[in-house]
Image (cartoon, rainbow, N blue to C red; front, side):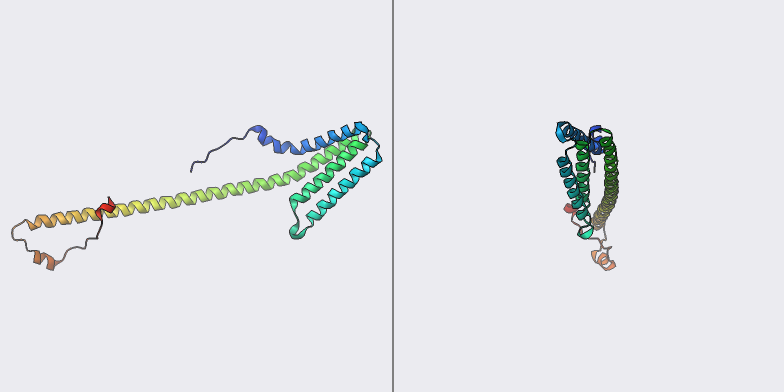
Length: 203
């Protein structure tokens, strides 16, 4: 059971770790672009983003409190959307950069906190799967070894039985050629039981 080991590129390994920062940075940049194109001090735009953020947060709350413990992925997505909309609204409405940057830091920190929880869960699942795979491989290997030993033992026993039968037949043939051989006496004395074997099947 030789499994091919594929080394992942460092970019593929780093991409999930950088995703939260990239997402919040993209929202901040788009918000500032929106600010430069007329969103600054626009009450209507700010109210729209506030309503959208509140709606996303409400959807996340309903998803988290759903039947059976709720859908964690859907709730996390809704809350992340709400935070992104709030960040975009503040970045577009505010006239300076300090407040958007502060919210960007908070949003990025929260995003990494949420992501770290899922990363730990995925890591535990991966480790558990690897351990189960190792146990299954060891069990299969043990069973294969036992079956191989059993088959070899059966073959050796069969060969010894065939050799014994051949030797006995040769001895009887040689004895029959000697003078004074009495087959009836040999029959009365009895012969060792020879197992019936199919020579063609064994060889």
